[in-house]
Length: 198
Image (cartoon, rainbow, N blue to C red; front, side, top):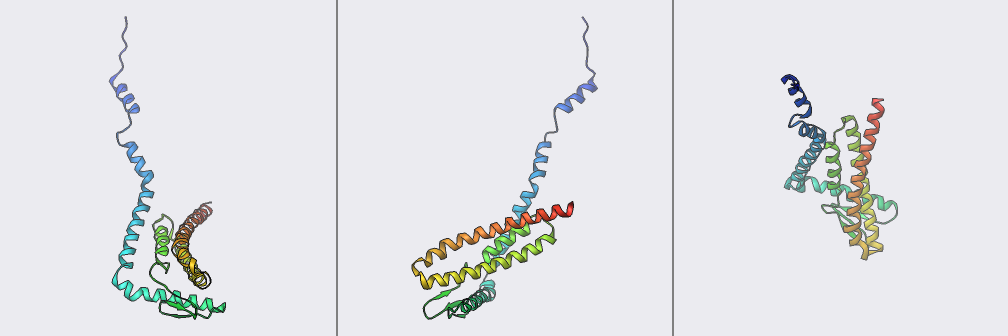
């Protein structure tokens, strides 16, 4: 009876092929997830920075009054084009039949920050980030003017529905619109990158 022995060198090589390194799967998994983790980390850091500034006394005292005054003045100007007879002073818009005060949360700053931080944290070239950033902020600002003017109109003609539309409808719509705008920007960026690579 003949016994065949396997050389020790071959034995070792077959063992290496059948048993991959212990952390190979973990490393490849981290490589795949790293862009997502980097985006989440960047988004969280930027939002923390935003809220630390937004909630500061300096912002509330020296910056926020100018933002709400701009919103009030521009909204009043647009409503007067349609003959609504409004006036604006600081954060107030008023007429002979109704008045509103633009407080924190009604100035679109949070929605703009949500959009801007998601855009800035997303891995993309700056030649796509800059136009997306400025276009998105401008669109959200214009949408907020539409929100203020529509709420003023509702306050005059449908006062019972004012609080519901203000607190429930527009708040949700604004967040949905900001996220949708960001998703639209991502698709546009990917399309532009594909065209440049072709």
